[in-house]
Length: 90
Image (cartoon, rainbow, N blue to C red; front, side):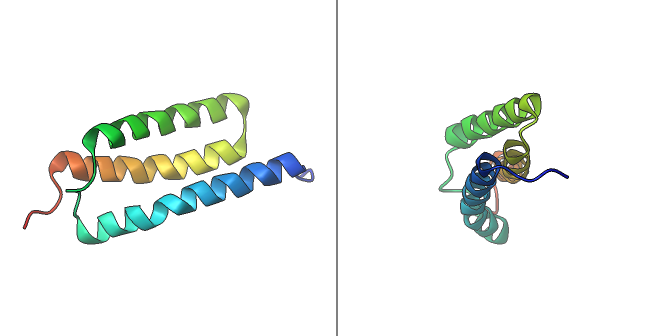
């Protein structure tokens, strides 16, 4: 395995922080099932954007983009699915 360049390290640091920042909201949503405050339009747009970033990362072979966006896409899809199903009521 070759040594990581400073650009790779920067990419991994950015990917880690942006993905990690999404986890508390995802965890709260999964734990409570409350999707009332989540905008369907925003989450739909966000999820498509993340999928496009993942595709872009795959085309470039950029592992920081691929890893971060794969994890974020899974979380976003799960939350979007909960929103579409209406979440927990009452």
